[in-house]
Image (cartoon, rainbow, N blue to C red; front, side, top):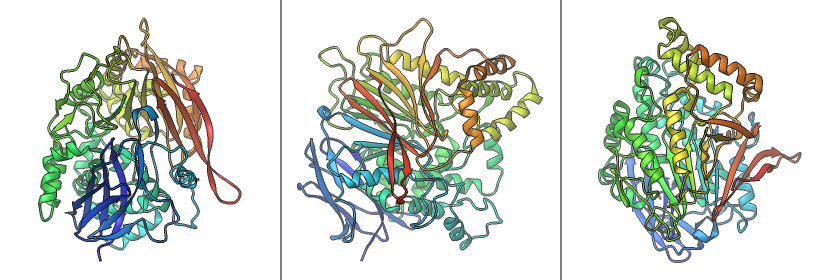
Amino acid sequence: MTELRLGPLLRYTDGSRATVWVETNGPCTAEVRCADGARGTARSFLIAGHHYALVQVDGLTPGTATEYEVLLDGTGVWPPPDSRFPPSVIATPTDDDGMRVAFGSCRWAAPPAGGKDRVGPDALDTLSARVAADPDGARPDVLLLLGDQVYADEISDATRQWIAGRRDLDAGPGDQVADYEEYTRLYYESWLDPEVRWLLSTVPSCMIFDDHDVIDDWNTSAAWLADMRATDWWQERVLSGLMSYWVYQQLGNLSPDELAADPLYTAVREAPDGTDALRDFAARADADPASVRWSYRRDFGRIRLLMVDSRAARVLEEDRRTMLDPGEAAWLREQVLDGRGESAGRGEQEGRGEQGGRGEQRGRGEQRGEGGDGEGGDGRGAYDHLLIGTSLPWLLPHLVHDVEAWNAAMCGGERGARWARLGERIRRGADLEHWSAFPSSFDALGDLIAEAGTGPGAPATVSVLSGDVHHAYVAEPSWPGRAPDARVAQLTCSPVHNSVPLSIRLGFRFGWSAPARALGRRIARHGRCTPPAVGWRRTGGPWFGNQIMTLTLRGRSARLRLEQARANRDGTTVLRKVTDRELA
């Protein structure tokens, strides 16, 4: 009998459709059957000896939540007969319900049951326990996972022992994952966690990668990439990382319409074994990043989400270094301004090459019903809230920003070859690779945000959602001589389940201080850095711990809540409020 190996993961949802992802232990027909009669089936496809299916469910009723079950070749496999969790549901809220967007990043796999958790309680586990305890209460409408869903370079002891049983750890890449099979182990370890497995089965999710999904410092610089490509193990590592990301994360980010238009998805499903087609795609994505788009857009009624690839889309050459290549930057601008009267098209928009395996990006109406014709009859723009998801924060502590800008200048040769060599060593050692390390891209994003948030039809809020830096904070920008109509904020939340050394905590706290700002200005002057076009101030944090942020958006109002996972004396964990404030 075919068994469920991993999942189900509830991924895309809108007013009438959903997709549910599963991995099975053999070829089969997967079926999702809902209590209200909605259903869908899909034949499994094969990648590197593993079987997967992405089931599209049609016929859902807007404004409802319906229980569902998963069947493989007609036999029920979900929910398990001995499940201690409530039934998994597919919810289709309406625009009038508002929306709760929970987000975070950096989740190191939880330890086995009964094992000591050296990084503290897992915020996703704790969120799952709370939702399960009150299934009819408030829950996230969507979960945004902003990078480092798995750690390919920081594996657990159990995974290290498993890898040692299949190859020599003295050969490269040592005790890090080496190939597709080892990547699957990371996903099993992370997503078979009972609480997380149930949470992902009942709360829709959107995901984007960051460096640890492949390797620390991924695409830090052209010199770094050349060093990696000179090894005998990097090619297999990066191709396996991209292949597994496409299967386990990116497929579920796409709408049914995008999937139907995706030549790679069609090829993989129609082939007896889709491994070669997917491997060829990953090789092309690695050799020419501009040929593939991993970024994507979701419209939830009058809420627009743009998940931006700030890792693979980089231009790394020092003389033209940018966070986003020209095609990616143009796409982001189109999506931000679509419906504001500035975009190049309404409806379908032409993509750059393949977008995570697809050829086109839908202009609007992807989720939670249709988005209308862009401009509301009352003169409002196409959306009330703009969410820009980027794994790396745009606004950092001022000292960190100035050091990264200085480092970019040194590596670019501003002070000569000796400083350039020193700058590259510092860049890698200190992970100086955020938006601040790409000064032209930092300013361009600020200009785009200000433009989107200004004038008739401006949204109520523009929020940049990020993780990576293992703490949480709120920062608000300002533009000299320019005051956007929208409330703009950098909202950073990480880790979900990880830690940060005391020295780094102290550094981030100091980085926001007045003395740090003065020191940063001196460093920037040494680098002959042009002052940034935007100023900003910290309005919340920094907060350290395993945590999750939630934005509650209703009409043109927005409320932010940060909660941390804390352990009780009896061993249970709870999410405790750290801050709860209005944004608009």
